[in-house]
Length: 313
Image (tube, rainbow, N blue to C red; front, side, top):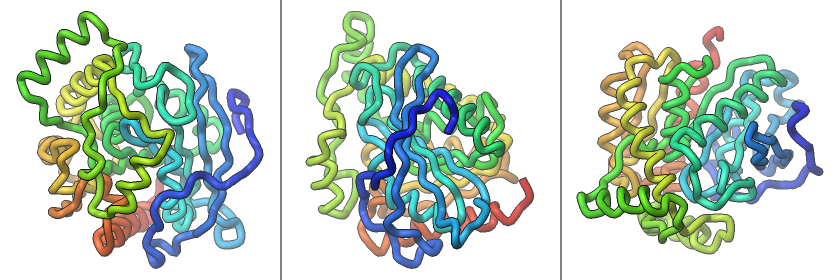
């Protein structure tokens, strides 16, 4: 572990939905090592790291940095980590500031690039320890952060995987007016989060677990929304600057973010680097969708990763 982190005893991360049994030779029951990393401003973030079975993979084939979405936490990605470890990849995820078990005021972004700057520090610490370029995998808000990181060329990455990235939102003129007033008068005021949990997945068990999860945040602030608005515009502008191979996994029936933003971003990324799989009936959390769609999503992910892991870095 890198020195800024304090390693805690190993214990299983909070389990997410069961993943497909045949996807990538999934490694069930892997335990995550929890640690904490102190950001430059003193905020400590919770990290979870999963390692593939050393009997199957004496040497890992690469590493993934996983960035979760708005209001949730990285404990919901245990099943995703198991699939990735089944490919021989080590995985590190973290609770973004103000989320989950990380420090920071709940759902507050002190400036629009706060989440992006945290990813830079997480990336640098991982590269110092592992001595290799990571694959970035981001979902929703995490997809926006990962897309900005890669297109701004803040650091080189091996590849970019975006799951239902927040690259456009459906905001009415009334909502934008309220946002501007709050941003001016009370940017840290927490108001109810408008996410409708029923629109996350067709799987009722996923929806129920999300609603019952005490680490899921139920509020949002104008400062966080402003980080979305500015970040989405910048990511779309910078899309042609992407230098790493990219896979986009998009739910066409997404009502949480506007999937049209993914189309626009994809169209402006260099054609030789991009690949997209569009799941027309998929809701927002495609890694948590009802079967058989969930298995199709993981099959698309693992097929793409196998092809790119076979290529020299």
